[in-house]
Image (cartoon, rainbow, N blue to C red; front, side, top):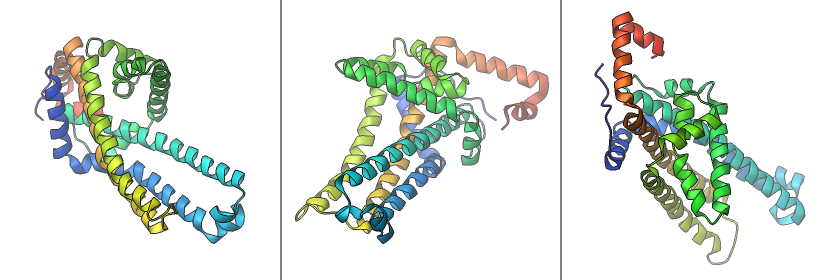
Length: 288
């Protein structure tokens, strides 16, 4: 196995490597994201079918006959459940992608199955870190918006730190604060790129269905059209979500190389493993 290319990278090199990794391992990354988001797609389709079915009409009154308060409660409950599932499933997909990028970066064997095997035992840490950083950024957004952007940039590698260093959410956030000090602008540009890609794709998908829903007058879209909308949303999530996870994972390693000489640390560790037990035994210890 060749030695990984561990060296300080400019932002342009980080982004270039991000898209090269994504392109060369397209099926791997989309396969990782497809598994959790497929569950969300199935739930969305089931809920759409349920709310339109005769059995649903009999139980909750249906959209045309239900008490307004009941309809609002059912709709709000469904939205909350969807958001909760999206949080959990996207967090699992992000964690699996981070481990995959790490293995690729360090020239280790990779697979979809291996990515999710890495995540076992780290799900609570991943979700806790995402939730805590979200609270911090949300609170910062309430303070004239700018503090939230700064906090988002400073905590951008918290999830990679939590996964790859087995840190608790609080420790991972502190770790991210240390690593990103002096690199907030680079982190902001990565965030900007991922936001533009995600919101741009979501907007393009939403436009035609929004037009259909109000033309020639406001109405409920047929089930088949709504299923198509969810299918396109699923495709957008699977295609776009890996990009941000790859970029921030590479940035995590880039910051460690720049600030902590991770390249030398890894090289010395590789030499030590080779001297003590050989390359095959080292692979066994790493579980790869």
